[in-house]
Image: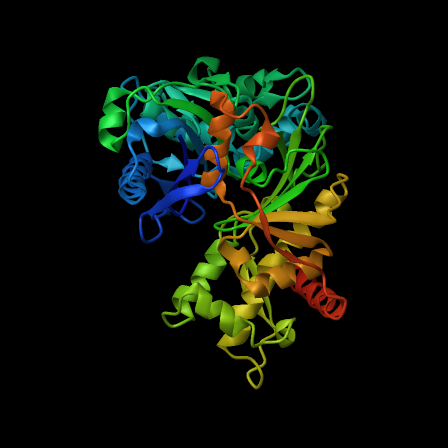
Length: 493
């Protein structure tokens, strides 16, 4: 008996088959082999065609089934995790009306900032826990204002994961967690944020109904089953945004527990049992996947847009054809602190932790007699770790105080340099686990279908593979490097 998890990210689609009994992956596959394209028609814009996600999901599924050599009826449930905050709009034929405006697109910053002021900052923070900001509701308002002909043909507006679920089942739903990431959830009343809809002039009928994150959310249609090589009627039993799901994947479900990722974006995500907000909305609070009205759980999230793209930029433009493993090895030859070289990683659009400002990326402190490309390799990874710590300092004011942070043994956490920098600058022990988002989605599907009777049972097979403690000999060096980095950031701003 198997569970299928899809991780529909910005760069790729990953599919994993999980053996439901052992909790271990049977096979996994990723498509495409290179990163999916992000279209940027104007500075600060970022779009992807939803059809591209579906095409690569089909490719990943076909490759997965060829590797696994199992019968498709043995797959009992499907779970979905997805890139958060994107906007997908479809017509009555369920066809996308335009490319998706994805999470790192900055075009709606001004719209959200104006809403924050005119709706009232106190009202927004107390009820939404966030500014409307550059989130999905503000992106939909941008379409309303700038593409009225397209807006007039909208049947439903949804998140990327809702689109994938629609392609699988033919039905359109979302979740309470999804509505909160759109900034369309009122935390005070536990329902739809009608104040935002009314202010933006958006018809409530454009939104999908919400289902529990762990629940039977539809069945694989005959058409989808034929395209994927799966069995019609297979249940879709879970969906969640990538960061709440990453926390779930790591069994981060209880107040005080903290997860991190460093892939396309850099994220720290802490769980709380009380609604909390930053007065400047530089970090954001959402409904966590384990939330129940009788036992509330909230996710406090900081996000660095310019994480993975900096690492990718260095690899593609400076590293002369090296892969990431080679780049990591060479970075380790340079001492901690990169001998005074600092890199600011904010070159991928507006950053929430900076109040939605965009200072741009920067390389500072170059000494032509000292620094080489290897220093850039290391300073880039340190700069991303420093940016995440900068955001974490805001979270500490919301009573998120990490002593231990969990992460999947993937992406930038595969780099010893990055792990060392992250642990020492945050002062927290770092635990790496043998999991990823697609595995988490598969486990969650087992809960949604009822194969697992509870969370503890679902995490059979999850193991800590490595623990990195702050090194007393390096803490001062990293603190000094971080202080220099923040001075550089303040000059750039």
